Image (cartoon, rainbow, N blue to C red; front, side):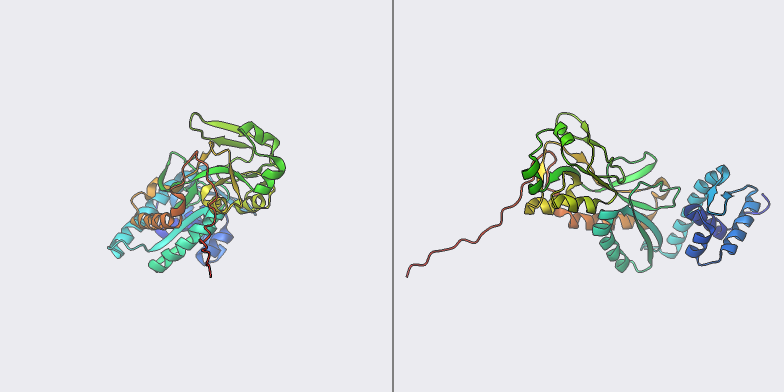
Length: 326
């Protein structure tokens, strides 16, 4: 290795590794594809190894590239932390954060919270993507995943933000027509609306019970990767869903949906998940704490709901009427 690579070239390398395209990387960095190609060639010369397999459609990391990406990410993160400490001694978040979350929860809760975060910290820049699968945070250079579900990779750091669990429910119109399932096996003969997203299987429901863990295989009538679609179909009486309490609490209380098989549930807490290399990032920790406090306020109405207990609709309170005798 004749020359040490400069930090700007390492950042170009990380961007290309994430975007898997010179053109897309150039667009993100505001430069030309030719500039990207030139800087990668210089970096490969400095490191004396090939970093990418190149084709006309996309680029992919070589084995050397994969090894270097992990080390380079750590170097850049440490440099950002030093820069943040020097330029921002009061630990006010500045710079860029890549954040992901699921479609429905991201749109309904995370996006409004990030809007407040931008207002509070004007020097903070955020890229926020909603996704329907669990991405490798290191490989895709993602700083923070606001994730629902308790299946978390051991090489990640996870902080629980709020409690949540999934339950079975259906519209009263569906239950009136098809009957109430009395046990898990009954679900096999019912119309099930399932979601294929993140940690959720569309055909196998793994469930908790007070006495033992259980599972049931179902043949879905409708599958989607978008929970909001499944939610709406259930309200319209098309079948049974297994959905997070944050998503269905309002409809359960109003009576639009009915809680069924209440003795079964699926743990699905809300977590902040991030790579271990960022555990000392004050910027990230400040943002996570802000997101947690906002989520606690937004989801306060579900925190008293208990796993394994029936959630019933709240009857409207009619004002007492008094008879007036003339």
